[in-house]
Image 1 (spheres, rainbow over the protein chains, first blue to last red):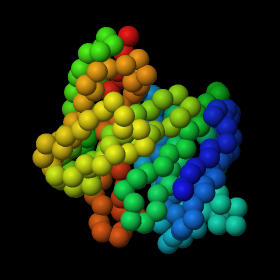
Image 2 (image 1 turned 90 degrees about the vertical axis):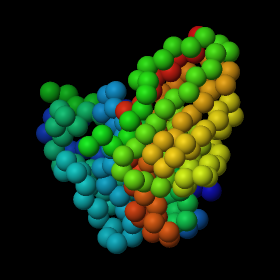
Image 3 (image 1 turned 135 degrees about the vertical axis):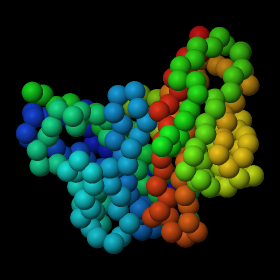
Length: 113
Length: 117
């Protein structure tokens, strides 16, 4: 069975600091991995996705994630946090032939001035 | 460009009441989904519809029913609401292209906040 674990329900960084949100997956087959962002009182928006074409994936708003098979990880990073990045971030996994996305429990990013 | 539209945005029910959450998408997607979001649990799939005329259970289907009215619309019904169904409900849609799961990017509505007293 597939699953996703997000380490840290809350992460707090200073504006301008590095953002690192952790995601580890469990999958018996090559996975497809996604990061979604949810701003307050809104639905989820796709940040980026990994589909085996390249291990380093660039997304919107300066975010990127690196797929590391040996570590079963897909951590999300951004070099310099902005106040507008404050939101909840979800990692999700699926596999070919499945319609179902399995979501992690989410990490709320707080950005301090 | 509306995308995925959910109505209502907020609803308060008493235990035992029924209601239907509406969802419509204008992206001509084949697949649609209903999720519930609870604190610390991420999103859990309630039901999904791979294409018009088909529906399947997700992870937490008990207490819910769905109808894929046409390609655009996918409704979620609570027949007898319970306090455990207090949650935020999201509808999503995607265009699934055969084995190309990579293209199954889901687009979400803004959610319905439901409280059951």
